[in-house]
Every structure is written in structure tokens, then in C-alpha cells.
Image 1 (cartoon, rainbow, N blue to C red):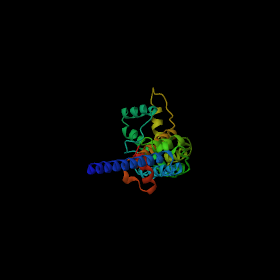
Image 2: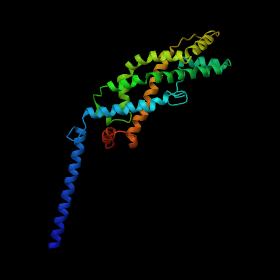
Image 3: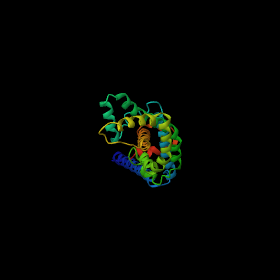
Image 4: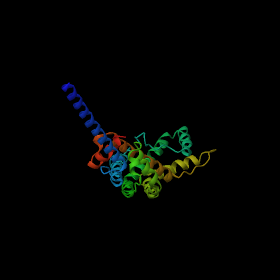
Length: 243
């Protein structure tokens, strides 16, 4: 009987201790997410998100600045807008496929050059960005931080990026190539004349490409532990691992 009572006592003690430990762990988890003593502040999470975005610019967007960074990357390659697709088709029908191919290539070359010049613009935008709902972004989708950056900065970035693209179009000879293409096309009989705004088009497409590449790095940091290259990234993104 004594042995039975002793066994029951030990089982009860172990169960009680385990239950207490479980409650303690649950409590700590809730504290982390709800702002308890062990949680990260919104500012800390914001810093980590900015670091992740900055890594996206440094690592992924830099790839766009290389020769063929846009042109041979199917995820971001700039194709012709609908207005110019008929121009492309007509040139090829007229035996000017080489000129049509060059037209596409130089648009991508302009984007590659422009992103190189504009990278500091993106870094500055990330640094100054006020992340007001950092916890929801951290616990959100794999591209939540990039989407937030895109929504809050696209308009001002466009204003700064557009003149850079315009300069790049001239620098790589894209404006001259397209002036020749448009001239030849508009001179053809029975066609509706075109006058595309290439600066606006390339600016928007280049911005889209930049955000796509930042998304790649954000997802990488969220899913690949080895990509968290600082203590802050490791600690903060560990929270979203538990969601």
C-alpha cells in the first residue's frame, strides 16, 4: 500500500510540474505576441523588417543592374506594351526582326542602368519608411513587408526614378533606337501612328522588377534560417516561425 501511495504521489507531482511548465511556456508565447515583458517592441520589429528589405536591395536588386539583369531574367524582363506589340509584329513581317529585337533589348538595358543609379533612392526610402503596424506585417504573408514598401513608396519613388530612367534611355541609346523604329512604322501605309511614352513605361516596369526581387529576399529570410544574417533578424523572425 505504501508503494502504491508513493507512486501516486510521484505521478501527481510530475504531472503538476509538467502542467506548470506548459502554462509558463504558453504565457511566454502570449507575452511575445501581445506586448509582454519578453516581447520585442514595434520599433525592434520595424528595424528588422527594414533590414530585411535593405538586404533585398543589396542582394537581389543588385542582380538587376548587371548586363542582362532584366533582359535574361524572365521574372522581370520588360516586354513591349500593347501599343507597341503591333509595331513589333509589323517590323517582323517587313523583314526587320533584328530591329524589333534590338528595341526590346534596349528597353531592358535602360532599366538595368537606371536601377544601378537609383539603388540609393530605394535604400533611402526604406530607411525613412515609418512601419506603423510592424507586428501584423511580421506575422503576415511572405511578401508583407515588400507589399507595404510598394504601397507606401511607389508614388514618391516614381517621381525620383523617372528622370533616372529618362537619362538611362538616352545613355544606352534606347531613345535613338525607338525613334528609328517609330519613324519607320509611322511611315508605313495604312497604319495608325504611335507615339509611346517610353520613360513612363520603363519606369513602371523597372519598379515592378525591383519589388519582385525584394520579395524574393524577404521570402528567403522568412523561410531560410541561414539567410538571417544578424542577431536582430534571427530573434525577430523567430516569432513568425511560430505563427
